[in-house]
Length: 487
Image 1 (cartoon, rainbow, N blue to C red):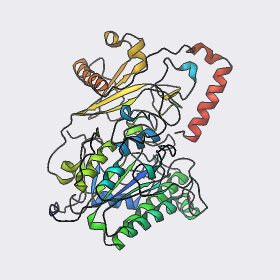
Image 2 (image 1 turned 60 degrees about the vertical axis):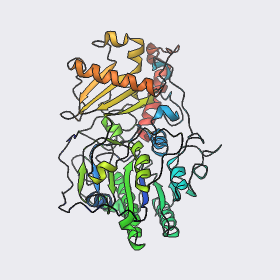
Image 3 (image 1 turned 180 degrees about the vertical axis):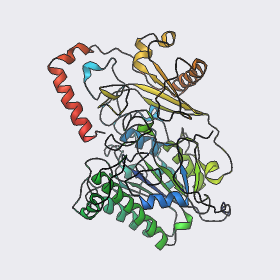
Image 4 (image 1 turned 135 degrees about the vertical axis):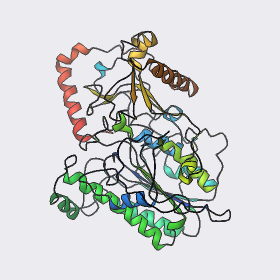
């Protein structure tokens, strides 16, 4: 299956596919660069008309760019838990940052499923799996999966871990350069053995900050039609500069040819940076909250300048890294992703038919073209199969008649992404055969992974109370949430 959402702006390269790695070649180093809140339209290679990302664009020219790359959750902590564990949210229980009851409580129709704030120590991470295979492992930047009780990255398989704060001095306000220098030192120290470097930036998450010279560069630049924030552009440019430093360090160490580099983001962009034609933004489960830049460069295996429209998710990176390293899946470990090696090498396609998301809670602050004027999302489960995407909203499904009243209760939304990447036309009441097919598949998946659903109506649900004092407090909280772009 191949979706063509937009004319891709990356120039096609005419290079031939590289020869397969010889059986006795050394195992590849693995470098994963994970941006924070960088949206699908926030890079040069995906079409921003104002931001500049020459190093990320270089990765796309020299590797494979996935035009339908996804985060496994709509905001930070759950996406990172999915990435590190290789599992969808129901298996590890990290659904949100802090709480799944985020927003005005009296407007929540159901009691949300409780959240887990840390990745359980017994959940075998990709770092533990690679370390067991002889890799040096380093984590640099934003962890966000707990630091106590065995959840610190050094307890989760990383030999080295640097967790700086979110803000530094004027010349490194987001600690992009401190994180990058530490990763470079780690690569140099382990140049004679395979290594896994997880470089997880705080950029471009609010608050937005940039080096003064970078900010002046974009203040002087003509604004784009879609993007025009000099500060946002400058923060993105500094993030990209960190990527460039990493790439140059690999070259200086003579490791570029045998290093697999992945660049992607933890969730979709924020409302301050339009993701149109995508609907929504970070924290929702429309395309704008989930679709992200996703690039893989591996000179010995991946054709330069290639693109792939197969939907891929960050849970796929765990099995991909194991396959690249020739490492086994840990005993007893369940992986929800699938190795991308057939796509990267051009040797075949993926076996799965669909990908899934599950969020049984509430996130405050509405998003552009959202379903809701109050919440970024309400409890929802999603399936993306073929060209189609179906969203099942738990409130209406559980409280308003479920399957028997699908024509009226708004429990299900259905979109044909091949012709409607902006999710503007809900086809649930028109393409009922396709709706029922995807709904059946989604319900089977929910049962198979034992995904918890909200089960109790909220006894404090009182929408009429919005006219009183509570309304003022909630509106103030939502404005603050939108301004600060909460996790």
